[in-house]
Image 1 (tube, one colour):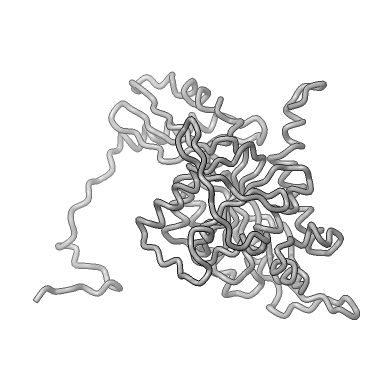
Image 2 (cartoon, helix red, strand yellow):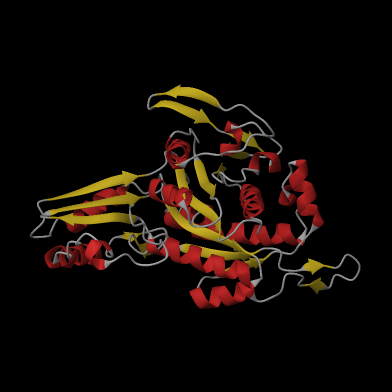
Length: 370
């Protein structure tokens, strides 16, 4: 009978394969390369490519450097700047830089949560709607394989995904509603059938949705991630040029603990967490307007202070947001003066100041327009 060790206890050290010790020279060279890369600045964001999470999978093998550079459609020139920055390494024979981008997409942002049921997809839809109201062109990739509800929230229901031939091969054509271009895993299955996909199938579908969708020209692509820190999240982070994550939580401590794990996961893979949205923060009384924190209070502030992530907004509970989602019309488009609409509008303006039209205008000489 084989002796199966418990998965909750460390196996006998004698039975484990001896791991190779790190090469001190390779570690020193990798540190040298990383330090040089910190000197490559992204002019629009006024930060270096390492701090922005653009450099991933950095390896030094013998006298060669390999790395992936994740950029938007307007940042391809950073590949040459990285090559130039590393050209002076005396020991390096060649630098291999693999450019990872999504054609036509300037800025890719992920919307994530540590657990399900906190309103992550609702946040993604309403943020996308608020961004369109600023004049931005927006795409939304619904990658939540466990609960792909975005098509219903945008009023699309069951729609067939079309494919078109392009010079780069076949590409999915995103659907469009309320000026938001959408691709969703929910469009691949019937409404009453479970999406019971194993890892390899899920990986292939998500990879296709990242690389084989003809988005056209977009200012923003929002990716609605599945909750948690599993296979799907890792696949999307590895395959897409996500330049930042918007984390969604609720005030109670259970949600805060899960957000903490998610934030650490993104930081480990080098993707910055841009901000935190506390959903279901309080209920506004329909008569007196007084807020009632029915799910507790202070969770958003706690995790924001602990992990040094800015708290972008505290979103109240409003029955209209559910009614508008069921009707397929995002609240910021239907009731722009609602408190929730104003909060998402402020977040959208903040994103524009960092990534969008405001930042592009500051980078252009006077008298020039795109």
